[in-house]
Image (tube, rainbow over all chains, first blue to last red):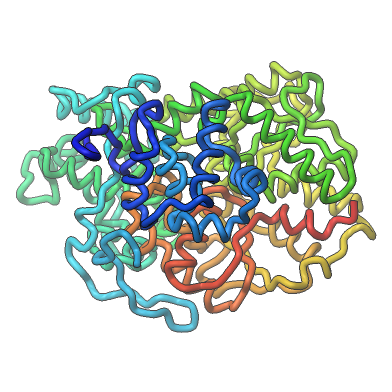
Length: 105
Length: 481
């Protein structure tokens, strides 16, 4: 199984670099994953999206509907793509430690 | 810059929206493969977790079983004369130039084994085109039968009428039986049994999404438009692709506005909030099991009819419902019933007379992408166009040999919408992208959630500035509620 290494701690990730166990996520890990997603620095805007994704996931066990993510964070989809170049379902979820949404998306 | 290896992709431009057959590039896409399945998923869907020790014997036994069950498969194995009519018809060949992606060459991977073990030619393998089933050939099966989207475009041009998709379906079924399957497809099927839908949206989240949409639409229209969940006794059960309640929300809102306008009682089901059927991409047992959930959900809620949403493979599996899950005569006819057929029936009855403002879509020059599954496998060719013409002033068709029954697959259908094979998706998406570019349309309408996920990526990659959306989205824009 692939691993990501952060300050000497190894973390299991899937083939696409998503961490296997969302409970092992922490902010330092998010910073490390962000670098693999072309996000050099996590700004306040990034954290707002990441925090919302985590809160929603903890309540519902799935990533939020994209329209709801936009509404609740106040960022339109274009802005989310500017913040997370690979998009809300891939880049943002990965940094927030959520499993990758799959299906017809 | 794309994050994937672009080597398999041919970049030559199209001429008048149509691609010419490329020069051959041996092995161009031979290293692009889907991630293999995970034991947690295969366990949930009754498949071996890894290659079984006696895989060769079991593969041949399964192949023999399929040949017995499916007379057509045996005919398709026997009658190909290798004329080559199919060679330049496949989007994955046109995009990669890899001759192993000739539909005939892909099918030969199975036919060689058929000749070796199921015909007298196998007694003299060196004389006929017969091969032993070995690990090298199995690797080619796994690679190239997952570079085929079972779209059947090649079959349209086959003078013998060979349904090449049936060959890929058989090969995938054999592989699944010996522990060779993909992570993407098996994970999705497992999620259906766990949560009721492909995306894995649990019931509480589905309800939350629907309440959120009610608030959104109330804000927009001032009307109490509902998105009902698990309402026993509703007249209609809608089985949308779950992606409509996650990503393609304009399509989901379209269903809500339509049923509100018509004053119909409808519901979705948290037992089965998915029309899509990934069993179709894997094996018959799961195809049947996933399909049966729709009928079970409809019976549990006591609805009068089931309407399938905008999803290509849902419809390909949906039209098989009476065969897969038994008679549907407990429901009101017609059945199976697609949302596009329903809308056209309402148009014919005059339900929208005087209530459609086409100018609401005047910002759009619309073109229509026929999903392979709804057009070629589901006979839905006229209906989406009738709807678009009724709700839009500006509609343009792509070149004739790229639409209707000759449509190109979006490039990611039938189990290929997964990121690790992005070079194949972008290569396979090229013929469609070139045809769209030729129209200069700025709205690409379609009735399939896989297409709606793939097309924005492929259009972006091929530099075609176009919004991708549903047909019902356009209807909802024009409808005076």
